[in-house]
Image: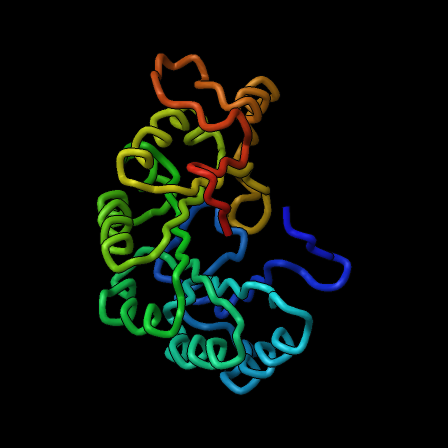
Length: 238
């Protein structure tokens, strides 16, 4: 057990680099759009933020670059390089799109980025793509998991629980286990942004999720630790 003092500094700092994203997810809290939002931090301002994280006690907080799609920022490698020089660890939470390309990933890996979190919101293409609104995105996400692992990244998968997918959680668990994913974070949808029109799961379903039980759909999926947030193989998530 580490002696962490969260009243001194946070363990994780999430920076939404941009509101730009090529996806149009039905539950997007940020209401992401195709173009950046005016007033987003510049490269210089971003480096100043990193400098502020580097002046506190060690270990410094982990900086998680997210969005929107953080890979739409043309300066993401520059920011990761600056963070490496300041001994601030960086993780990324990108969208699965054409920008999640091997050359860019190699540059980020070279600058010390070792953790990537992606989203998978269904055990089938029908469910996942109904949420993500991009044809072929389910297969692209599974392919991305494989490419990231081959490139040496530790991959975390995030799943937002909602009416669309609550009965597929056990099957998602089996799917991710087979793909070699070691960290899976499961969380309830918060009805904000574009998600404000999505119906909540009912109390019985919520109880099943908290105990991680298949929702009586005949699934024979694996149960991971019986908790909403699971650390598989003892690996802690971002």
